[in-house]
Image (cartoon, rainbow, N blue to C red; front, side, top):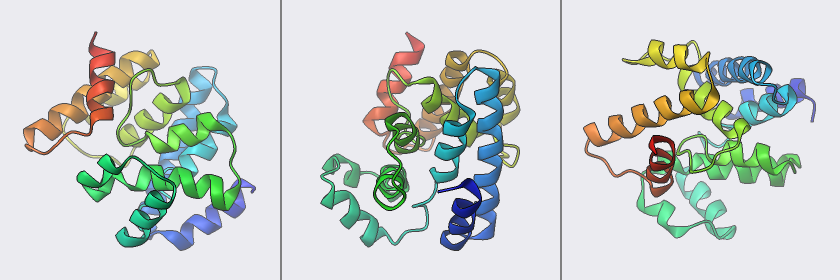
Length: 184
């Protein structure tokens, strides 16, 4: 599917505010991909799809994930985490995306994981630092995003895990593994 057609599809699946976020993540991801010698087309595809399931009904999302035998541990965590693996499934099943790096970048854009590829880090970082984000520390993360990907990812996952611990909410194991990987 051409990006223009996908963009029209995305507009129908999410509120305007989220759609604008997706466009900003896409531009940020393309910029990061260009800076780091990664495929701009793959970054664009992964970024456009990253929130495609964000506004799916929770019951439908659970059914989709269960039907594809996703890790049942996922259901013990907030449903906010479900949209990432659901988005990867939708990208593959409905839109025929076969690039595993793109699918993994969609799948792990909320949790991160140990040993991420450059594209996975680009989508994670772009999602956190796109120009519309406004949270304490985002300007510092944007500065990190201008440097090496692994250092930017390290700063982003430290920020995420610290934030979640501060809220005293459970941290999904992939995020803990990601944190451990990047702080070693």
